[in-house]
Length: 256
Image (cartoon, rainbow, N blue to C red; front, side, top):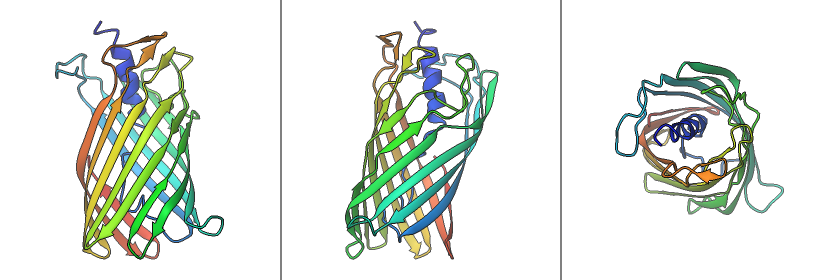
C-alpha cells in the first residue's frame, strides 16, 4: 500500500513546484490603471519524502526546481465602476526528481479580477479573481519530473486587503478544481487554500512582512478509486521584505 500511494504523492509534489507561493504585498490592492510587469525567480529543493507520521518513505528524491515566472498585469478603471485586472503568468525553468529532469515552459495561468469594494480613502479592498491554468507545459507520463501538469485547473478566488496605521493586511481564499490526467488516469483532489500576509511599514517605501499559507486537499483518484489519505496538507510560513525604489521598480525577497 505504501508503494501504491507514492506515485500520486510525487505527482502532488511536482504540481506544487509550479504553484504561486501565496499572497504578496499589494496583490489584493487596486493599484493605478496601466500595465505592470513582474518576474518571480523561484528555487525549490527536497532531500526527503515522508508519510503523515514523519517516517521516510523513499530514498533521497533529489528534487529540485529552478523556475522563473513572468507576470503581466493590466489594470483598468474605465470599463467598470471599480478597478478590474487581466493577467497572464508564464513560468519557465528546469525541474528534477529521482533521476529524471525536464526543462521548458510550464503551464500558463490566466487571471481576471474585479474589486467589488475599491475604497482608497478608507484603504479597504475586496474582490473576486478567478483563474485558469492551461496545460501548455512540457509533460511525459513516463518521467517523474515534468514542468507541465497535463491537467486544467479552475480556481475561484476571493480576496481582501486593509491598510491601517502602519499595517498592511491581505487575505486570500482559493478553491482548486482539477481535471483528470488522461495519460495516468489520475485526478488530483480538489483543494481549499488560505493565504495570509501581514506587513509593517518601516518607511513608506520599505515593508517588512510575514506570510502563512495553508492547503487542504481531497484524496487523489487513480483509475476511479481514491487513494486513502493521499489528500494534500501543506503549510508554509516565513518572512519577506519589500522595497519600492520608485519609478515603477520594486523588489520583494521572500523565504517560506
